[in-house]
Length: 110
Image (tube, rainbow, N blue to C red; front, side):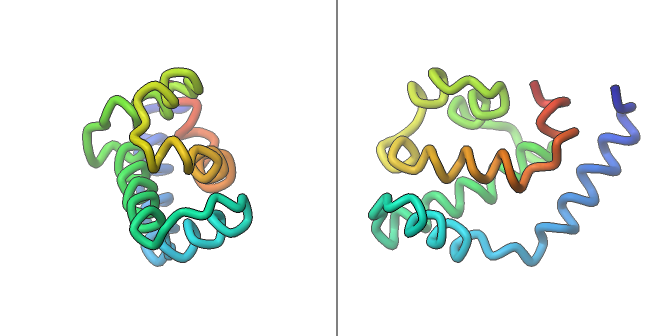
């Protein structure tokens, strides 16, 4: 188990790593990859949601019920709390959490 100091260091490094991350481009690529057919505003909504999720994982903001369920890896809870766009884009959120969020932040957030 990581200490609070180690987790803070991981959070700060993650923030540094994603400071130039292009959330809209990434969300649009995943939209095409998963054939979700989200509109431009839908992709923008998801991109903002991913940015907000980074802030939640790094302790920079409080989370919404939807984000809380994502943090807990609760698929049923996340589907229950998701708005219409996030419901359609659940694969994008799963991909982001699995491939972009550092493992220790996922473990410590549960």
